[in-house]
Length: 268
Ligand SMILES: [Cu+2]
Image 1: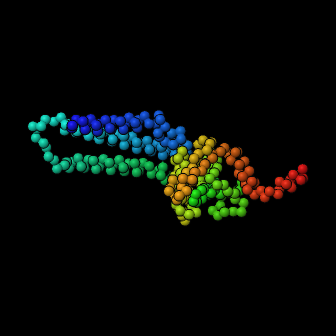
Image 2: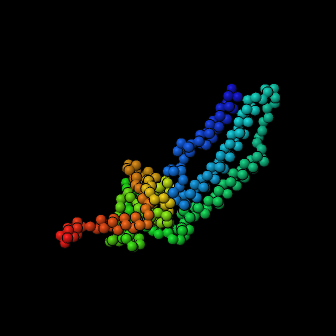
Image 3: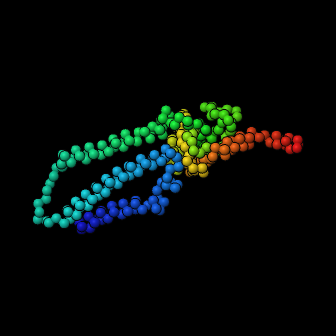
């Protein structure tokens, strides 16, 4: 029976490693194409891969040791004396110091990425604030400055708005001001690796750059009420020209009172 359990635990570990190894081929990996679509996202992926290597080496090492001990315990001759141990002081010291060292290394190594992600003074210098995103039960409201103007902290008469549709220029660092009208929400764009809580009473700047011109899924990642599942929106990254043209069009559409067109037609 002992041999069975030794084989069982070794086989479980081998299957786990095998599944993990082949899972990216089946799409069980990072969202989207498997590669982040923002430059900071790619650095976050690199951190993830580094941690994955450390964890994998540790896992394989401990499983091999476990398999060895189980197998030895199962095959040892009964007449041999069993050794009773109160533990090993040196082993305790080693397996406390090594993980602490690894954790300390990860903590220091990721500090730079963390600071760039979250600390405003570390944002890229040319980051342009393009919109204010307000989460509310259960949608995203987005405020843009009028074409040619810059975003102000408070709403301006010529600002224009969209709901559940955030348009940004691709290829350069931009930021949004994130806030919430009611409870806590979370702004999550998986393919860009951007996730930030929207906290009542706070305006939180979130910067990112989008590398590929296309649409990305934006979801709420904080259970915020019965309609949480409905807080699904889109981030559209556009070329500079398309983005400017859209701003002019969207702003004109919002301020069209329906009469101007009639007048223009009369004049024709
Ligand atoms: Cu929400």
